[in-house]
Length: 117
Image 1 (cartoon, rainbow, N blue to C red):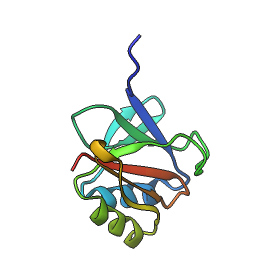
Image 2: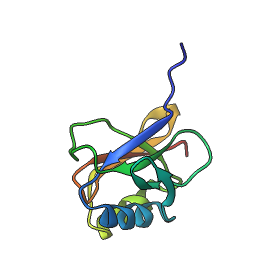
Image 3: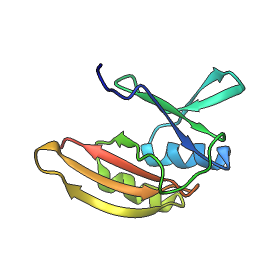
């Protein structure tokens, strides 16, 4: 069995606020797609796993930690703070695997960023 991430969902309370926050942090708007219960707000990208925002789960910092690919962690963390989030971990080296950083979004979730650069 091969283990890979196929899909992720980030819990939110206020969908409009979260769509604006993630669009600002990523520098690219979230897309929409038809879901079983109406429109879903999905993360941009064509490589690897994709995911969406969900109101079916309660937000919090102790749940699953999702790593979003990011070219410039420092700039993304600055945008996260400016958009109403907070930095949980500044850009940190993980040796040959690149760098990571973490922020709390406007809904209270901890989200990580990763770059190989």
